[in-house]
Image (cartoon, rainbow, N blue to C red; front, side, top):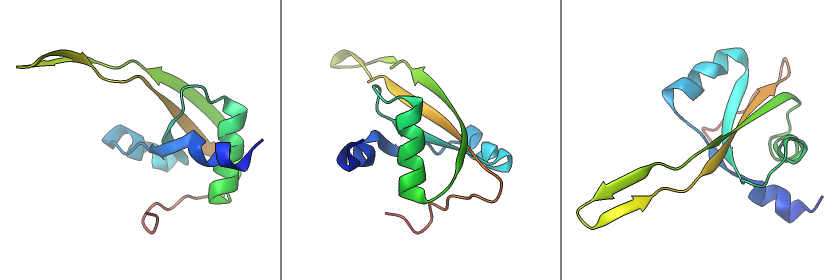
Length: 97
């Protein structure tokens, strides 16, 4: 797999109240590319963060339809990846930019 593709596969960590509560279960949630497969996500997370991945679950979130005074528009669809880390592995987002 191309290193450049691995770097562009993961868009950002998905930080919500529900996603941070999964930290006790040793899971992290990422926004990933819609075309990404589970094996590609696993390889990208292991290479970027130097951790061992145990399991990955993905979910496609459909974009909501919104309206304002200028009309109706639709937000983009995105894919979430729930990454379960092995015991002893941990990802810290505090020092990253």
